[in-house]
Image 1 (cartoon, rainbow, N blue to C red):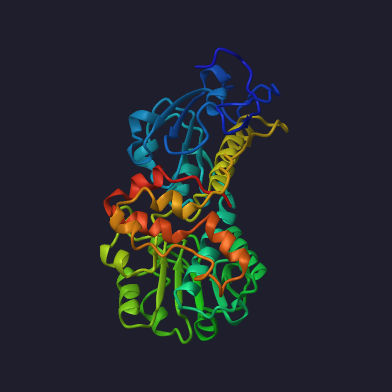
Image 2 (image 1 turned 45 degrees about the vertical axis):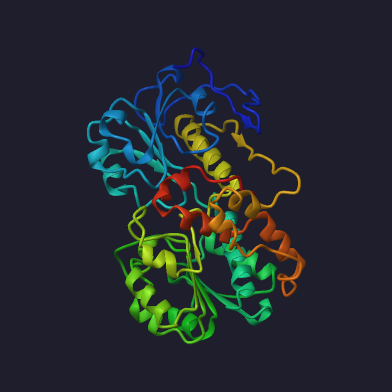
Length: 399
């Protein structure tokens, strides 16, 4: 418990804590007043940069996301989680939780109808890691070009983006800045292009939708056998949305038949127990880390803490500032990651050189030095049973 009656706004630097103090008191938006000393927060222990900051809001208990139990939350006021915690009646039935915050864009792990029934508020962090996912998609396409799956001229490549919310829009901006053409498909947002249009015109299709199972635009198994059968020009398929947006069996069949030449898979059905055959078939295969840049993580943590402050403080209040660590000089992401792998993997890694990247613009070479999704692929293939560990102990990456 805090020994003071005030909370503050903070700036987190690479070294422990640099605190900018702007005092204010907390007043809850509903129910009886909660004094900061009495507020209790249950927090997923893999949320980065949050330790030392959240403690200024109350007493904090850190638990692995998948292991947070009804006993943990029974006397809690705030729950801060990621996608590994299923927030539902089973978890919250006998709890005193007033606010649930997920430090992610997606929120399909939250039973929002139950929370509404109980009068429990919830918040997510829209757009927090959008630029990180955009970096992942762009750099994966550079790798696909180097492998000969796409034309070396970005202007010759049309990328179909399914879902143009925060993430899909960021992907489109990043690709257009490099000369790629993009075509958007998002009926709920009024985009007129259909999946059939993308199937007819695009060499790449990338998914960036939430996971929904009901309604006219449900995205569960959006990429199914019929989707892949309809493709006319598509060479590269990317799923950086939710694993269940793709029918794994249909995707494997499309790769094996040659319908898809190059699959980039960051999100999987049945995580963390991923399909090993798809792991082998995919060109890029990563453990749900597209949005895991340090910048995206810092944004998610900042927004999560701000949600807590805003919920319990009815008037404008100071803002949290969480800064990501700086990269060391001459940083090369692939060398940092692959050098830690068994020699059997590092020996066959297709290292970037000025000779083998001659077809790419110099900016692409620099972008791949800063982040190379193929390095994350080798890391996952070297230890596929450590999917969750790799997510929880992800290397430093900047946008």
